[in-house]
Length: 504
Image 1 (cartoon, helix red, strand yellow):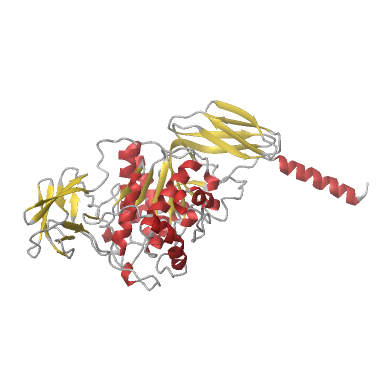
Image 2 (cartoon, rainbow, N blue to C red; image 1 turned 120 degrees about the vertical axis):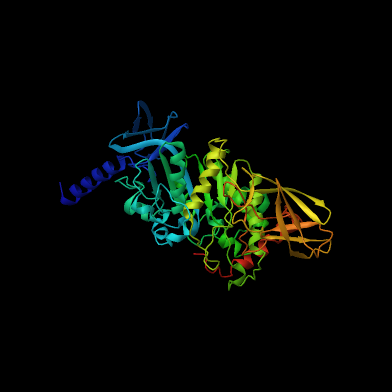
């Protein structure tokens, strides 16, 4: 036998052996948390026809890889468990994943304010934290985080699609792994664990400066009748394909979303509403569950009007964008937190207070996804108005234990207008369950606006410490006519060439 033939045979045997190895997606690894109460699907690659066996907590399932080497096994739903267990996946080779828990799993995505790391959180001025967490300042959380029931998985867009033979993507939320992880996602998990007392797993998949379009697959745009046959700018699918699709169908409880600044710089309103609805619907479809909760963050105060981009922005740009965000709440199983009080520097598009962002998202989840009826999850929300002489009486939902001025001073952020449509600063005061708004120079009022300015940080809250949602009674955002659809491509193409300052 020649050396060449021997080498060829050796390489063949090696390649055959490698081909036979079971390969798992990166989302499966040591230290992971599996979603309780839902069927659990495990999948991967192997040799065509290879027998695959999965064992976990008494369940034992077997299947065979198809002609393309793909295999999938689904285990029955499990109850939450903080007892570390071993997951065994066996074929030609055997993979043993250690320290696996069962609890609640959430996927957290968006742009830089979701990506905002615990390392950055540790550099925030301690004086900005008005409340402690477990007896210490949340800015110092890295020094205290050691709860083995909170697990984290940080998506790396260049690596998620590649296998990891060491299965090390999941980590206990502490030390160096936590330093690089999303602060909003971590504080969400911490609050959730405190209230549910089950293991919590959070997956962070976010890209600084990203618009919403890259997080939506091209197919989702094509299948949405709103867009017709238009070409969508903004690189659809760019982040969805490497950072979201590989996670499906890993069982999750729901999604958290903190994004919008980059689209606000483009002065979007209704078009953003449609895009976010498309994202939510397509992600739910990808997980084959139309009821997956989706909770997101309304943008914080920031001086968009002072940006240097080609798109000219006004002080009303942010309120109008927030209104567009609010319209997405028409979809079932959605929720939105308000952040008008969570900005320290209006020239910083990355405000601190991520501990409070996480807490408020957790309140939404506790109230809506976990049916905790005693949890007040939102601040006052405008419901209706009534003209009473020279004043307008406003009614709200989500008042909790009652309406309050957070700082004890006269209410701020209200404007009022008559039939001429000219808005003037207004006086407002709490009258039981209502707010009365008036101005001396508007004797016959017809409309009120609240927090209708990018810099507004009003003091109307409920007693539970949650701020009122910005609103206007005169022009609620509605679905645009077909003319908007026809002009959509032209407008967005022009905007795509404009710069987006400060969005990273």
